[in-house]
Image 1 (spheres, rainbow, N blue to C red):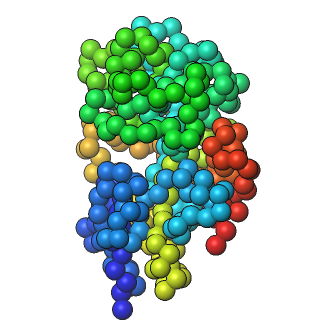
Image 2: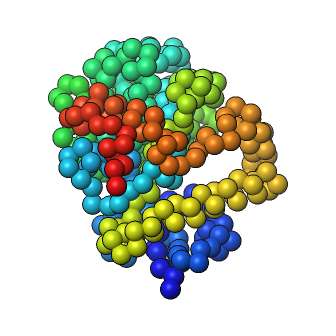
Image 3: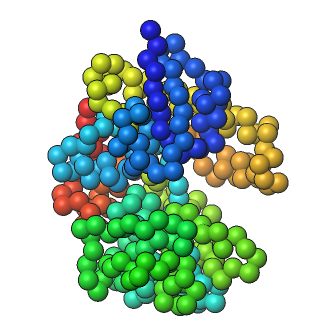
Length: 314
């Protein structure tokens, strides 16, 4: 009998083969559901598995446990050098220059923003060297608490009046902005925003050679009642997702018309990074997991160090 799994994920393109049925399993019947927020599905009994915040998972483990069974299968990875914006008229062109500046952030303990702050620590700028303001990126984004217990008056504060971070950049009230997604105005020809690191790709390739990985942002989680009944289920689901991603990458080489220059990026990636740059599993990702857990501790998001193998002890 096949086990039906309702999978809640963002609509990543590499899941297309799985969603269309090109990738199948004799044991699993996977139904793909698109979600805007990776947190929504965990509160909904309609879903069995899905995308989980790497940061929230490690925070849970450090505090004694996490309600889902999670494995080191990273559904979302991404370099963060491209996630730092400043104004087009700004003279800030290096990470070191952010010391003493006012920086906006879309969430404090988020996986992506934690990795971005790591870049500052690598060049000797601590979180205490910056004045932080947390808020929504644009006026279209929802209003909610983006700091929680991590707020510190005069150092890490919520934007007053829920003004969008892009508006504060426009008025010069912020010197830079950390965001996992580009605001819509960034794509306009008359934008007042630019990447702080103009050649972010060069910095990202160097970062990979320095640390050996592309940072993990979201991972795969599944409800424990299912893993209790079917202990191998989560690993089998991971294999299906890997196969879907492999098939998608293979097809992109042939069908590369999403953008006029997508083929250039595919070729450059194959030459700049090893073929297994996004491989899953603890062995391949142990250093990255350990580095992230250390960053959560150094940035005072968790209160004790935790080793990679302890994070994913099953």
